[in-house]
Amino acid sequence: MSDTRQKPNLLIVEDEENICELLQFNLELEGYAVSIAQTGVQAVKMVKAEYFDLIILDIMLPEMDGITVCETIRMQNINMPILFLSAKDSVADRIEGLRKGGDDYLTKPFNLEELLLRVEKLVSKNKRLQNTQHLADVYEFSGGKIDFAAHECLDKNGQKQELSKKESALLKLLIERDGETVSREHILQVVWGYNVYPTTRTIDNFILGFRKHFEQDSKSPVFFHSIRGVGYKFTSKEKK
Ligand code: CA
Image (cartoon, rainbow, N blue to C red; front, side, top):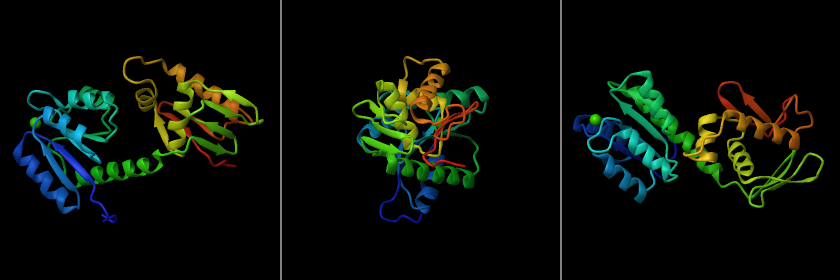
């Protein structure tokens, strides 16, 4: 780890002692601070009390399974990254885990090197996000100026336009991830929450609206991109 100021804080949620030991030993060796929860209930409690840079979450747990733990955590708007670990290997389980808000998935028996690499990747990605999370209330770029708090913007012609709360939220999310593709699932999770999922068309319409406000030519956008089958991307830098 190049950043030695503060060790990344990991939580392992796993009821099998030998796997816990293996993970703890190797992750501490890599420079992480490691906490252990042996049940899902304990994990939920710990997550409420402390920030973790990553949760390694087993699916088959006594009392409360890992999927439910993940769901419970996400319902409380806790965005710590989650790496699912499970003996279950069916595609359906993977999809369910990711759909419930997991960030990655690894099946047992896992390759230790691979696990360590994925952990490192998730932790550093999260750190990057955290650093950009405190976006100021007003964001200015060559397409216009957005005031997230006031829910309004100045469009490409300098005209004031009102934004809905959801439009502001989506703009903020995309701009925070400048240059990165944000998945539909993630947008739905963050902007719409869990209960009311709109159709994909709704996000498309929002993006069309943004283009109208901020793009010189809506048909060949330079800021707001749709990545077919994956999600959406904002890029602040115009590419020729
Ligand atoms: Ca287990």
